[in-house]
Length: 250
Image 1 (tube, rainbow, N blue to C red):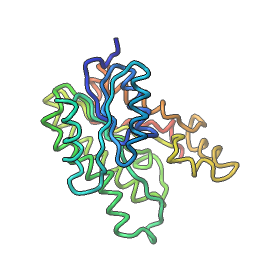
Image 2 (image 1 turned 45 degrees about the vertical axis):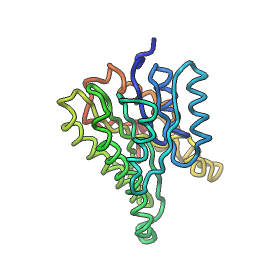
Image 3 (image 1 turned 180 degrees about the vertical axis):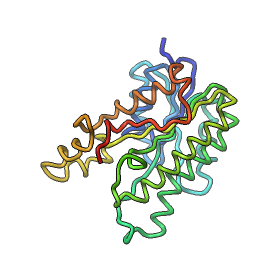
Image 4 (image 1 turned 90 degrees about the vertical axis):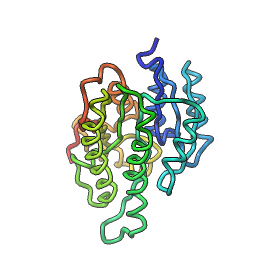
């Protein structure tokens, strides 16, 4: 029997990349997983199928984040499948890679709408659904603290805001036994980082050199940490920023 058997989890942005890895890991640990997607229903259904093929239980829910009413739409879809939640993983996010001189106001606002405003309102509107002794895990980034990459400034700012949200929310939800933490990956090999990692023949080695371990991270490196925080073993960890960069040297 899995360590999360009997619990329901929701992972936003779970149709691919880190989110999919987290959803599949929580499913293997016994949780019933709500696989959220923004646009790609087919990819989300692939994630659901992978979880079910491994003996788990899952369902897909769609809501495009960064738009007015996005959190309400997400919870409306969720409520059609479940009546409560134990584990919320705010993973969905978008990047921005432009210098300050070039980023336009609309782009800046869009990144904050998806990466900060959406998680805030998802939690706010989900408080009545989140059961006592539950878990909220926000996927941050090493760029918020350990690395300085000016062309990713706007993105890093959103993750810094998410970290503050995690810290303060842990105090709000602590009396209910709900833990809240930020998990901060470094460079992880996903489709989102494919262009960076394969820009030229030396790109992968340059990316690996950012880590003290000399490696590019794998999705499982993040999912395993999230799984620990979601488990009973993570009960005494809250309000924390968990570095999953492999020891960033930037």
